[in-house]
Amino acid sequence: MLVVEGLRAAYGRIEVLHGIDIEIHSGEIVTVVGANGAGKTTLLKTIVGAQPVAGGTITFRGENISAVPGFRRLARGLALSPEGRQIFTNLSVEENLRLGAYLYTDTRVDKDMDDAFAMFPVLREKRNLNAGGLSGGQQQMLAIARALMGRPSCLLLDEPSMGLAPLLVAQIFEVVKSLKALGVTVLLVEQNAFGALSVADRGYVMETGMIVLSGTGRELIENPRIRESYLGL
Image 1 (cartoon, rainbow, N blue to C red):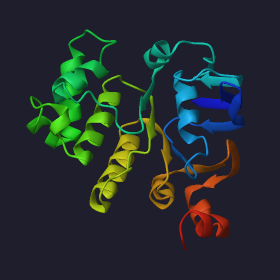
Image 2: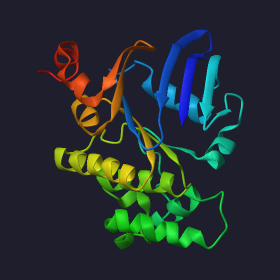
Image 3: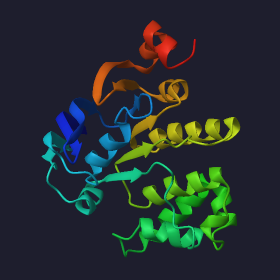
Image 4: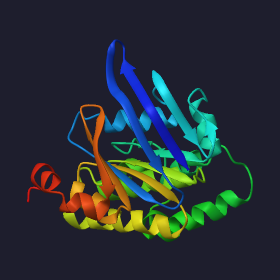
């Protein structure tokens, strides 16, 4: 579904992605793990068009989208739930969700919202409240639901467990697994390496803008280097 080849990205003169190669097949959960500053968020931003491509190619469903504007990538089925949630705190929960569906004006939008509420029942209860009044976990649920309102075939999740209590972290990873059951392909970026690799079909390890290891989620969990460097085992 998604193939990234030789991808480079830079902020000014400073290159932060140094020839990234990854691929995601339809129906998979693929995770990218790594320390802070490894370039994980830049990778996702470049894939969705929020950061320019400095070199290499991004191919989505057989089409080279490296120069396609970000909003057109969303229309093709790529959506991002960003790091830090970035919800609109002064708007209601429902208004946030409707903004996620800004590409669509058909009657299916209401069904999409009902589906989001079925996945996250607490959002239905708070649909008319300002999003800024939600707890951190509820805001993360809203960020994921808002991305799903764009009807993605491939959802990119950036640090969905960041700053959440352990019980909520477990809930978020259960949501990730449920997305696969719904037929959504997921590319997950996480510092919580154990949680991410536990739900992933495959994973990549990123260090200083490069992919240094790849394998199935189980292979990476059992890799001595990963266990020592990222899992604390």
